[in-house]
Length: 163
Image 1 (cartoon, rainbow, N blue to C red):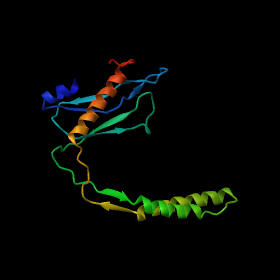
Image 2: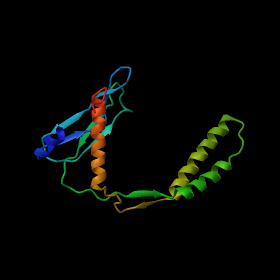
Image 3: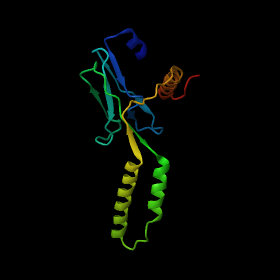
Image 4: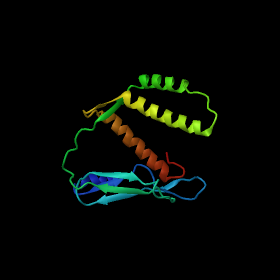
């Protein structure tokens, strides 16, 4: 219903999460609220962030950040690629060369060294590609995603889904 309303009007933006944000204290723990914001400002860019670490309640707290200059184009994202085969070989060598430890101090020191070596191995086996490599999603897949979201919404709305 909101999608049809949005398609008819060019002066609004509808921002919403794809999942529910309120969970009642019921036996099934079903979510029953989907937070939606309708903004009468035309089409603009926004991000929705989850604040679950900062706040806790029976809601999943979210924040909607609006970007003031919706017409500027963002620079292409730099994508980081990792050679997981090399990384796997490097980490196997690190893990199998661990010595037997006698005290908790040695364990903590080994954990610190292992963490440092894994981070180093990850950076050594990764490279950044500055070109935007976002795959273009075919319309067939986009339609399937849209249909799945509608079905998920219907399932969340009714306790017993209608057929």
